[in-house]
Length: 123
Image 1 (spheres, rainbow, N blue to C red):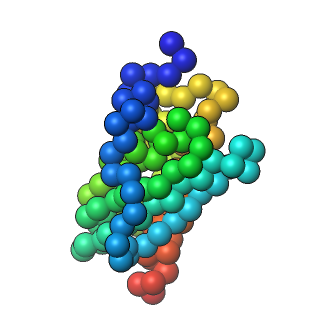
Image 2 (cartoon, rainbow, N blue to C red):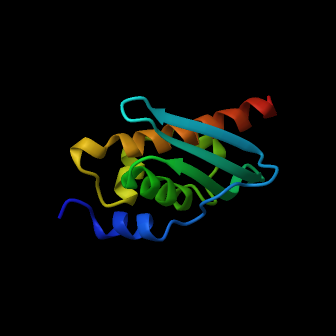
């Protein structure tokens, strides 16, 4: 099977998709190779992600990675997310084919950018 059941489920039933009104931070990640883009919105309370939402454009794995990533970061300290690795997003999908690993990178980049924005606003 090319894609895991977890990936297919997140693609067909994306969690936390859509805009967020008045987010505390927003970050984007993009893969120039095919134009995939993920935008992550964070609402932060007491230094932790109280709510995460996303917009994603591109291949199915990128949409699935954004969905899984939004669940992965829930309730986590924002400081930890500044160092989120693509491998963590990939594990949340039970793997990605070699030619689709950029999906996890796009989402991890977006999460790190949002975390960085929130942290820079606090200093």
